[in-house]
Image (tube, one colour):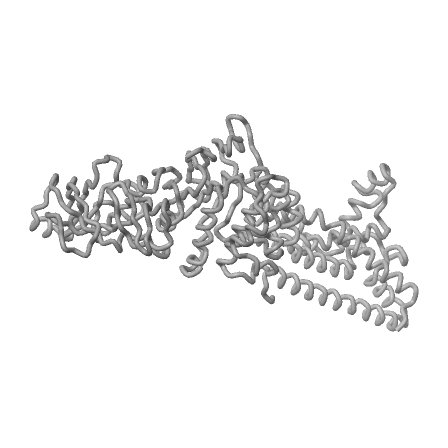
Length: 373
Length: 232
C-alpha cells in the first residue's frame, strides 16, 4: 500500500476524547466501529470541518493541518470530497446545480472527472432537473456522491452513506459503490458500523472504539482478532455471541457459477457469480456452521474438507464448546472457530492437539448476500 | 376617491420612512440575530431584552428616549450635529430611525428563527466543495434564510407604516416633513369636519395593510414550496 493519506488526530469534546493515527492508500479503507466511536468526528477533522486540538493531516505529501508546523488549511482548500450520511443536498438548488456546485474548483485542476462520466457512473441523467425533496433516499445519496466526485477530490470521505436507507435502497446503491471502487483510483475512507458492508466494499479495515483504533490492517487479519470480535459480535467465549471466522481469498478461475478461490488454508470451490480471475472475496464462516470429523470424510456432498489441529477447546456453557482450529502451517493464517456440543466433544474424544477434518458447506463460503443491519 | 396633495405627501412620506427604516435595519438585524442564534456570550440576555424593548414599552417612551439621545441637544445628537451637521429631530430621517427601532425586534425574531432552523451541515458541505465562507454564505445561508428575512422585513415595514407614538414624540407632526399617514389621520380628527379626510386615510392605510399581508403570505408559500416541496 502506498500511503496517500496519513493523519493523526487528537481532539476532545466534552467527556469524549479522540486519539487516532491512520494511514490510507488507494482503494476503500473502511472505518468500522459502534456508534459513538468517534468515526464522524474523525472524518470532520480530516475534512477541516472541526479543528482538532493536536495532530496532523497529510494528503499526497501535502500538509493540510499540522499543529507542529502551525498549518491550518480551511476545508475549501483541502480538495477532500465528503459524502454525508443524510446527503446534505442544497434544498434550494436543482440536482444539476447541486452537482455543479463544486465544479468551480474542479475546472482548475487536471485530475477532474468529466461531468458526463460521473453522470453515467451514478445514473443521474434522469434526475438533473429535479429538486432534492423530490428524490428518494437512494437517489439523494447518489447525487451526494456525484457532487463530491465532481469537485475533483484527492480523497473521498463517506460517512455511512447507506445507513439512512432501507435494505432495498441499500441494494440499489451498492452496485454504484462497486463501480466507483473499480473505476476510480481514489483513496476512500468509508465509515460504517456494518461488518457486511465492510466485507463487500473495503480493501483495508480500521476498527475504532471509544475514540481509539482497536485494530487496523487487512480484513482477514483485523476481523479475526479476538478484541475486534468482542467489540463487533459480543464477548468472545460467551454463549450468547457466536464466533466468526473470516477468510480472504483470491479467485484463481471462475467457471459458470463456481469459482476456485485461493486462501491461506488452501484452495476452495465456492458458488459465486459476478466474479472474475484476480478478484478478492472475503468469506464469513459462522462457528455453528462448521462440523468436525475425526477421519477424512468420503462420499459427502461437502466439497471443502480441511485437515486441522485442535488448538483450544473452551466450554461456553449451555452444553456448548468453542474450538479453535489450526488449518494451515502458516502462522499468519486465520484460525477456524467452530462451535459444537460438549456431548460431541466427549463422544468423538476430541482434545487439544488432536487432528480433525472440519467440514464447511460451500454455500456457507459464498460471498455475503445483501447487506442487512 | 381623490387624495388631497397633503394626503398624498403623507402617503409618500410613510412609504419613504418605512422603506428606509426597514432597509437600514436589515444588516444590523442579521448580525444580531446571528449572534443570538449561534453564540453564547456574556450579556446575551441583556441584549435580547434590549432589542425587545420597543415591543413592550409604550411607543411614546421610545420616542422620548430617542429625543433625549438623538435630539439636537441630545447626547449623541449634539455631537452628530456639531461634527457632521446631521440632525434627526423633526426630519423624515428621524422618522426613519423610529421606523427602524420599532421594527427591529420583529426583524430579529423572524431572522433568528430561520437561522436556528438552518442546517449547519449544508454550509459544511459547501465548504468541502470549495466554497469559502463568503461564497457559502451568499449561495447557501442567505437563500435558505430568505423566507425569514422576507417575513421579518414585511412585518417591520407594516409596523413602520402604522407607527404613531414614538414618531410624534421624537420628530413631531410637521406636514411635508414628518407627517406620516397615522399622524395625518390624527390631525384630520382634530379638525371640525375632518371625517371625510379621516376616512380616506383609513381606507388607504387598510389597503396597504391588506396588500402587505397578502404579499407576506404569497412569498412565504412560494419560498416554502421551493425549499421543501411542501405546502405550508
